[in-house]
Structure formats: C-alpha cells, structure tokens
Length: 308
Ligand SMILES: [Zn+2]
Image (cartoon, rainbow, N blue to C red; front, side, top):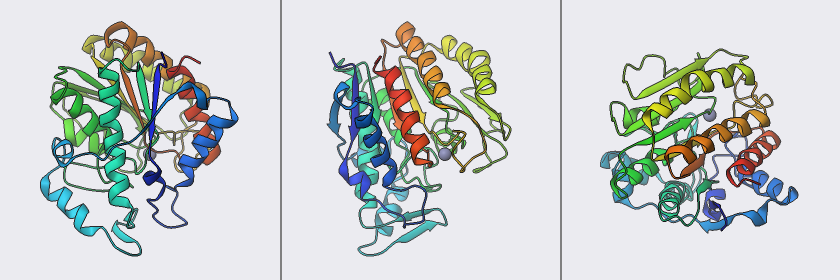
C-alpha cells in the first residue's frame, strides 16, 4: 500500500498576488521539483484537490464571510482584501481547492486508503478567521478539514498541530473552547499577527518562541509541553498546519529551525498517531517563503510521513 497521499491542484498555482508577493506560485513548483530531484515523486498516491462545498466551508466560516470573499473576486487584475492578502481571477477557485484538499485528505485517511496525506496547496489558511480573510489566507483549510473529520466522520477528538512561524489565529478563532479539538502551536512572538499569548481556552496550547530560537529550543517545547498534552488528549486524528517559515533561511521570520527539526517533529507525531490515532495524519502546507529551504523542509517532512 502507498502509505501517503499527495494532494494538490494546478488551480493552486494560478492564484497570484503580484510578482513581488512572497506567497507565490513558485512555492509549489519548488516543492514538486525537489521531490522529483530527490526521486521521491513515485512514492505517493497523487490526487487532484476537489472544490470545497459551501456546506463544508460553513462548518467554520460565516455565510457573510464566504459571500464577501466571493464578491471581492475580480474578473481582471488584483484586488486587495488587506495589505497582504489579494485576489486575482483564479483566487476564489484556488481557495476552494485548498480547502477541498483537506476534506479529501480526511476522507482518504478515514477510509484507510492511506495512512496519512500531505496537501501541497495555496492559498494557505491558518490566519483566516470565521469571518475574516487576512495574512495571505481566505479560508481556514486546516479548520475545514478538522470540522469535516468531526462532523462527517463523527470523530470525537482531533488535534491540530501548528509549527508555522506565525500564530494560527484563525484556527484558534474557529475552535477556541471546542473541547473536541486540542490545538498545540509554536510561533515567534512578538510577531504577526500578535496573537496567541492571551488565550485562556483550555483547548489551546500556544507556546511563543523568542526571535532567534533554534531547533533545540523548539524540540524542548515539543517534548515537554506539546507531547504530554497530546498524549493525554488521545486524538483520533492529527492535523498539521505545516508552515516552514520558521526555517533558518526564511527571512519572513526570525527562528532557526532546520530540515532535521521538521523531520524530528514529524516523527514525534507519526509515533503518536500510531499509538492512538490509527496512524491518521493530515498535513497541510501553510507558510514557507525561502523556496529552496521550503522544498527541502517539505521533503524532510514527507520522508517521515511516507516512511521513506
Ligand atoms: Zn507563516
């Protein structure tokens, strides 16, 4: 059995916020090129991302939000929703594919067709709140996937793990206080979006890292804080907001993680998934803007997921 699904769609490369925007179509090209160069491309079950349905998105987003994003969609040129977040005529479809990828990933993993799945999609999602598009994000892909696992597949406990350099404020907004979800995260602080340190919800374990924190500091947080909480929670599925912008070479942020740190944390999570979640992991691309470091980090992550 091919153990890992790789879900993407060509439409995700057509979303373009302008030639100087770091969240660029080239991010996905860099990942697939490096997979081919590393001889990894034949080890996955490839799937095209379907379009998320209105009903699937409505589990975490307000109807008004969906309507606002749809209405903003331009026929020509680029329209800004905030200074960082813009739409061209392909963005709406790309955003539906990005959210739909997570839904398909959950379905494949729940059906036992694969043990785990990686969604190489954009736009990313973890800054999108119930009613707000921000920080390059329109729909909260990981939240839509988690809600699908809970509602369509009747799981009672899912964990969301977020190691992007930015705090996943949108995911927190979707699930704060929802006891079916445990969110654990690390992020640079103080840093955009300046959230994550004031949550009192018992299902949110946000661990801020100071600028310059390296892999050793990250691993200590994961071992001493994330893993005990995750083991106590016993998730039936682990969802990963896989942002790679905490990499040393990524100038978007100021953390110093390396490929081996991403491989290490992925191994911690696959071990946990084996213990309590029937190996089920759904990982979705979030940030990561230094193209070479992004591609190497995704490959390091994939090698552990696919046990290759
Ligand atoms: Zn980020």
